[in-house]
Length: 131
Image 1 (cartoon, one colour):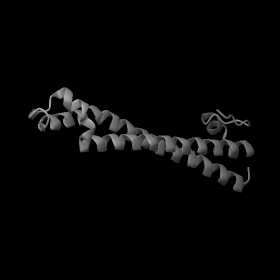
Image 2 (spheres, rainbow, N blue to C red):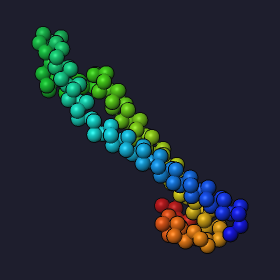
Image 3 (tube, rainbow, N blue to C red):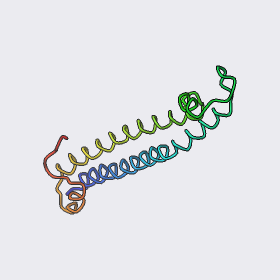
Image 4 (cartoon, helix red, strand yellow):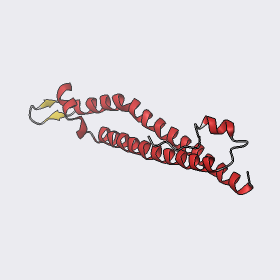
């Protein structure tokens, strides 16, 4: 394979690896926020239960606090962060899929000598599958 082709293949494969790392980071952040949700919600309910329900003149009950938990600023911000993390994961997953597709095109158009183990690892062949 000529140097220009090898450089192109190396670049698109490096992009796949970088995209996979970004996807892993995005998914880890999403999972971290999901794992914190119950604790953040419990703390929000406790905060709400410590204030007086204006309709009853006594502190909110656990049931009432759970019903209005989205009014808690900290919990609402956490939920917003979770939504954003999920959206980020979806965007990065798209970038990763695009990088894999670019690698498939680059590798399928190149002479595969020396890239066989990587081609197999990336499940690349001379056909492009659209799933």
